[in-house]
Image 1 (cartoon, rainbow, N blue to C red):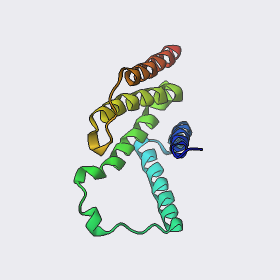
Image 2: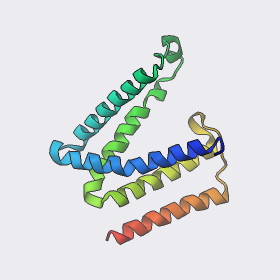
Image 3: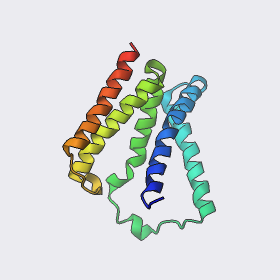
Image 4: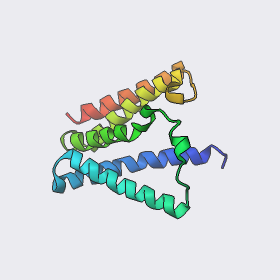
Length: 151
């Protein structure tokens, strides 16, 4: 196993977990009601799990001096995550998990291609080569097939 394999497997596992998260959140919505309420419960559970892991791993609390060097916009990742979780809870009951996640993946790939190409938000630049663009086009075509099959 080379040094990159662990990162590839971690990304694959993260992707495999998403449909389960969407299904669980959609099921919880049947009992709780509004998608934003379920989003709150999901993030509260995630916050508590993250805290427990940090405590067990004995990660130190970041120093105030380090945190003060960040920009305000670096802190909105959780807000964007809230929008993502809410959107899947909102859409999945009406369009199904496969189409909701296919559209999510297509949106992620299109946005990621731009972020990589420009090295936006501090990312390493990876050019939007014809091969990478073709890969994203294939994802969009795949989403179209899933959407067409849902008709």
